[in-house]
Image (cartoon, rainbow, N blue to C red; front, side, top):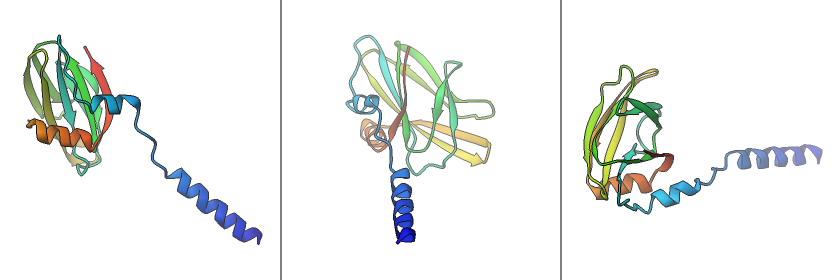
Length: 144
């Protein structure tokens, strides 16, 4: 009897310990894909089936965060030319000529082995970009 209760309690703790946390409030707001009149919005999204590498990302030579598989960054920038790239030995990069009131979608993919990662960045159409964002979870909201 005591053993059965112990096993039930253990099973209950294991199930609740694996429960996924709800997304933060910024996640739902970012998935509305709202434009800003004075800035451009860049969505940088990693597919959920991408490798599990953590990939640091730099915007205009400034570290802004990292992406993980199944996550995205919403980056609000002033109009102008902006360069997204990987960090350190990562040779991936893309230049976005951003206009105020516009949204840009960039797919970020990771490659490598253990701590040696490389990534690629590619502009994608709004349909693909929004699908990546809807299927992901926000990693950060970055505003300049």
